[in-house]
Image 1: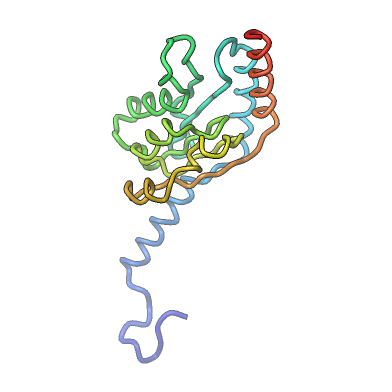
Image 2 (image 1 turned 30 degrees about the vertical axis):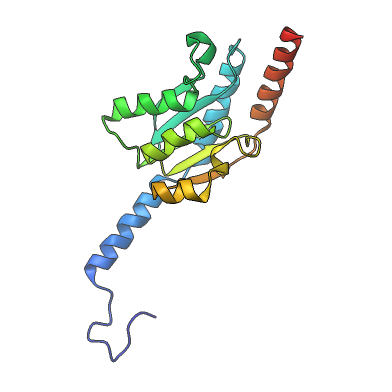
Length: 182
């Protein structure tokens, strides 16, 4: 119980209540419901069928439960290794929301963001990243060093929700790639 009979004001002050309510509202804005995840997976399934030469990396950004944008990898299409779906999606979201930081957004992607994308996520201050397939040790955002995290003074919540569609899409892509180049 907060306060005691000896306290001058046994009830929490109004400012603390307001701050707590604001924090609770912010946290609820960053929660993801099953319908968003189901819709993401369904859209990914449709896109994977048409992926062609591109690695099946699909990303969406949500702002307060509203879809802001979605992108698919365009590395092969543009012959540019920086055209990962996460970076393209972050660029689009910043443009649409007219902001430098995406501090009240959620990023959902099919594969754990690589280290290049991790830098963009950190600098964009995206507080929550959900991915469906973990990267190999040392290759993804979850592998960032404590020093990197400390120097940025920011790190998003990382949530891996393993999904067979993502695992199978990447397996099929790399199997086809190996056949093509062998």
